[in-house]
Structure formats: structure tokens, C-alpha cells
Length: 336
Ligand code: AHM
Ligand code: MG
Image (tube, rainbow, N blue to C red; front, top):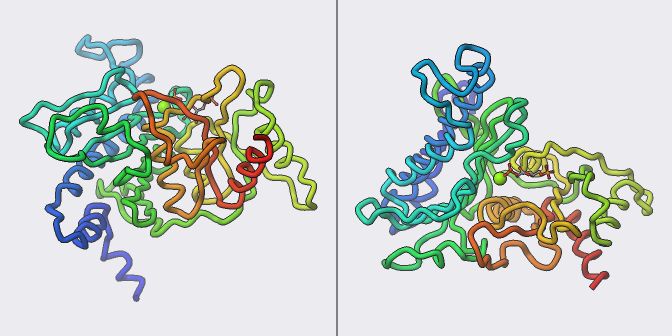
């Protein structure tokens, strides 16, 4: 292995996924085609996000651009791009987006065997100040050849075929699992390609960071309160954990995956189901965390066992390092 080989043999995300898929004898490249359309959406959003501050500064200020057309808000624009990219892939039948009340049923001539659930631009409170935001997605397979229905996506997270996110941060990072570990790719802007930079990500067994919106502490239940108290004032002689909270799920989960620790969005007295959405936030992130050797728990059960009843359902979520999630599970078990 010379240093040179590293620089000339580039493992792009397309090449990586084609390699992975070729292990399935019945693979016809459909998944790779679907993924390339998702990647296109991510590249577009990455470019739009990085120009967003600039667009405000120069001429495009206000709500109209030079042609006098209304400027679309970044989250609406991102949604339009993903919906169009997914439909035109010819590989999807039903799409669920955080931005759309109703599911999109793809017209028969463009249908394929996949169902995609996604949040095109998550972390809305961070858009206008340039803090990291991201796209989250999960992929299901249609049960059999029939008219797609909501039942095809109202499936437990463990039935997902693949899940991932793209973080628009200091660099643009795409993390994905097709059920065979987790791999991270970084966009090389000069090539316009995602290159494998984080092969086979494993989350540390235990971490030193907890991540939660502590402003909601007044309304927490006893288990969450006790857990956070334990993070700050450990009684077993260990050091207190550090607190990190960005308020963008993608960024908070990405850090948790790489550094270890726990991310919590618990239910509370005001919002018994918390804030985060089951299909396109809780499930994809739980899928990735489990694939990386961590755990994801709802306060009642393994997150991926949840069966959603409606498209935009919410659930409390505790996810992260295996041992840290064990601790919160023990507190909930003691409480019931
Ligand atoms: P959004 O869909 O409006 O962007 O909200 C989702 C975001 C998550 O990215 C993040 O984990 C959470 O909301 C933060 O919520 P809060 O501001 O209540 O701490
Ligand atoms: Mg969201």
C-alpha cells in the first residue's frame, strides 16, 4: 500500500454500493440507481445551503430574485429537488416527506420497487444562522407487485432496507447503511463525488457526551430526569459527561456516532411523544446506530420495533453508545 495508491484509487459511493449490491445474485442495479438520485439531491442541497448566506447578501435579498420570481425557502426548495429526483429515478412507488402532509404516490409509468421516507432539510432553526443541517432518509421495499398503499411505509423500522443522512456542515458528509455496517463518505467538491472517508463506522461502547434540550427539563418524566442527573453528578466515581447540543438531529447524531455518548429527545408532560418523527427521523437514525453497534430505545421498546400508525407520527428517542442506552433502559425498567 503506497501513499500513492490511496490517492489514485478512489472509492466513490457509487462504486462502493455497486460492489455491495453485486453480492446479491438478483441485483439488477436498481438500488444503485435509486441511490444515485438521492446523492444528486444531497449535492444540490449542499450547494444551495453553502450559497444561502451569499444569496441574501447579494441582490437576491428580499423574497424575489432578478427575474422577479419568488425565492423559494431552502426547505421547500430541497423538498422539490428530492421529490423530483426520486420520482424521475423510476425506482420508487411511494414517497413520504416531512414537508408534505400527504404521501406522494408515483404515477404508474414511473414506478419502481422502493419506498422512500425522508426529511429533506432537517434542523430548520439552524438554517438562517449557518449552523449544520442535514437530510435524513430511509428506504423500504414494496411488499409485492400491487398498487402502492400507505401500508407499504407504515412498517417498523427494522424492515428498512437502507437508511442514511447527509450533513451539510464544515464539509458535506453522507453516512449510509444497507444493513451491512455503516459507512461515511465526504463530498470532494472539486470532483463532485462522495469519497469513502469513514469505512465501517463503529460507535464507542460508552461515551462521555450527552445531548439533549435541557430547556425542557421542567416537564421531563422521572427516568429522563434521573438519567441527566446521573450524567452531571455520577455517584460511581466516574467523571461527569460533557453536554453538547446543536439542535440539528443530523449533527447531534453524527457526533454521537463518531465520538460516542447519547442523544435524547424524550417525551415530556407537554409533548408525551417528544418532537421527532418516527418514519424519517427516528427510524433511519436508529437503523444507523444499531448497525454501528449502538442502541436506540423509545422509553418503552427497541425503536426499530415500533409500528407507526400515521405518516407523521412522533416518538421519544434515546440513542447512542450501547452502554449509555443500557443505563436509560434500566431507569425506565425500574420506573415501571
Ligand atoms: P425541524 O424538523 O423543525 O427541523 O425539527 C427537528 C429538529 C431536529 O433536527 C432536532 O433534533 C430537534 O428539532 C431540536 O428540537 P428543539 O429545538 O426542541 O431542541
Ligand atoms: Mg425535521
